Every structure is written in C-alpha cells, then in structure tokens.
Image (tube, rainbow, N blue to C red; front, side, top):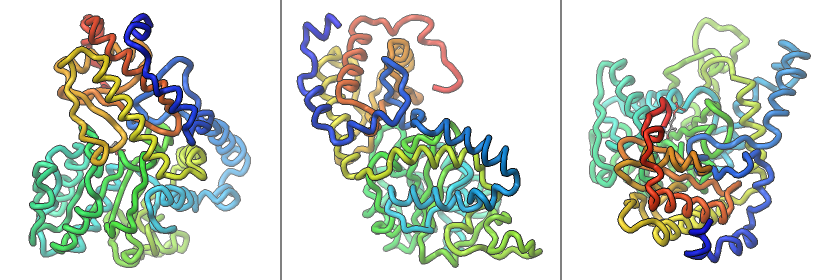
Length: 415
Ligand SMILES: *Cc1c(COP(=O)(O)O)cnc(C)c1O
C-alpha cells in the first residue's frame, strides 16, 4: 500500500470500471473476498446458480424422477442443447456442436474423422509448442492406425509447412504458454488451398473472445468447458462438426448414443445426423447441468464487448507491470494485442516461486514449465482495479525478493 501511495495508483482503473458495460456480470459469480483471480483461463470460478442447479438435478430430477428423468427432464438432449449455447459463442450453427467427454477425447474423435477424409495423405501437421495432450492424441491415433506421421514445426512456420502430403492441420488457436493468437481464417484458408482438413482447438478461445467457425470454414473444432466457460473442474468439453459434413464424418468411437436410433438396439452401427453422431456413451447429466447453468453468465453478452474489455484489461496489466516492476526482472513473452488471446505471460528464471509468493498474497495466476508465469483475463468478472492491484503486488514481490523463500520453491503436483 505504501508503494501505491509513493508511485501513484493506476489513474485510469477506477474510471475504466465505472465505464465498463460488462461490470454488472461480476455479480453473477462467487468470488472469494479479497482474492484477485487471474486463472480463469485454467479453471473458471463458480457462477451463481450452478450449485442450486446441480442440487436440483440430483435431488429432484435424479432422486425424484429416477429413470423417467431421461424423458421428463430432457436429459437425453442436454448435450446438444448445451452445444447450441456454446455454438453461439463460437460462430457455429445450431446442431453443429455436441458436448461430452474431455477435450482430449473430442480431439481424438475429430482427428480420426479428419484423417479418414484424406486417406491418401500421411501427415497430421501441428506446431511444436502445441498443448501436449493434443500431440499425444495425434500420436496415439497414428499408432492405432499403424500409419501416418505427426509433423511438428514452429508455430510461425505452420502456414508454409502445409503441403500436398498434409492430411490434417491441427492447431490450438491461442498458445497456452505465450497467449499467441493464430489467424484462424488465414490458416484455415491455407490448409484448404492445399487440400488439407482443418481441426482447431479452441480451449483458450471459447468464452474469451468472439470466434467465427462458420466464416473460417474449418471442418472440426474442440474446446474446454472448464476454462472461460466456468463449467467446473473436469466439465464436459465440446466438439464442432461443420454442418455439410454432418452426414459424412465417420465417428471412430462409434458408441450407441451416437447411433441414429440408440433405442432401436440394432446390431449394426448407423451414425446419427449432425454433430450428435460424435456422442459416444451416456451423457454426464450432473456435470452437463453445471455447465448449462454456468453458461447463463454469457446469456445476452456481446462477445465483441468481451474482446474489447479483455484487451483493455491486459493492456492495463502490461503497462502497470512495466511501470512498477524492477527493470529487467520480467520478460514479456506475449505478443501485442492484435495477435494475443486473453492471457499475458512473462518469463522469469524463478517464475514458479514468484507465482507461489503472489498466490500467497492473494493474486492467483499460474505457472507453466520451464519458466512461464501466466495471467488470464476473464472479462465477465474482473475489474480494472483488480488488474492494477495485481500488477502492484507482483512488482512489490519482485522488488522485495519476498518470493525467495524455501516454501515458495516446493513444487506441487498441479502448477
Ligand atoms: C486445457 C487444454 C486441454 C485440456 O484437455 P482435457 O482433455 O480437458 O484435459 C487440451 N488442449 C488444450 C490446447 C488445452 O489448453
């Protein structure tokens, strides 16, 4: 606080909060008093109404209706209803998004359908900094098929690396370490010009800024329910299938609930129409109801305003860190706003310990090996004053060296 008095508080923060058109959304979340949460890109906070909805689903629907709930409460359609709500946020037509399983599993399903569309081509192309599970799933798929190759190039070289042997380009729109945001329309156009199929991972995009899958023309996309969508730990993920492929994409995980008529109990598999064919087993109704209730926070929200605020929050954080932190103590690794998602990352040789100290002082971000500190900016519940205060506390921890205590160096399982 004395620092704040000496150096002057961020002059704009309170004024920006007063003019923020999304300011009222904060009241829709449970946020622990006094805590500044900059990790909604990893696990979104608990929206109000979720606990009540889950409790009602458990007690009234499951407890009271028992198996009648599948019809009485529309459980069977929940994956597709929630899919349509997510679809609005990512520019996907109704019926083109289904929800269930994890992002990893959905990526496997999308990749398997994508490679089957280009049987004569060998390569799944991705960037060498992609989120590991995406790369692991591609390797697993190739292993299972006994053919195909995962080719990895630096993110900046993806477009040039697409060629006539590329079956699928698999990319995460926002890099989880640096926050770099790819040009979705341009990369998709490049993939299509070379005859490749495009699969996007929208884990760090969905709910953070507007996405226009329809305009991009991409064939498949996947994304997370527990990051910016706030669906809770391990929330079901989603899978998008371009509508014109709805009768063509072959589900590799041909489960009974992706069947055209699950309750006809036919011995042979026959996929449903639309993204619903990518369903596998019985939908997770409890976690789907949590995600469904969480999506109420996005109801009526203009995603363009979300992007505008996300950029403004990040810019304020970057300028305050630059103004207050000791010279040279941090290296900004995120690109300028136009090529950035909704997070800001810095390198620091002792980034893990610095982040633990910051968390101990009430600002939660996270750390990604080997040396990256990440700060996520979720516009529905963050205030500009929170962001300015977080920068101040970070700068103070760096100036004082308070991070250099043995307790802050001890690594936990989840960083
Ligand atoms: C968070 C994230 C995932 C998570 O996958 P799960 O199967 O839900 O654990 C996958 N891919 C990317 C790019 C992510 O950021």
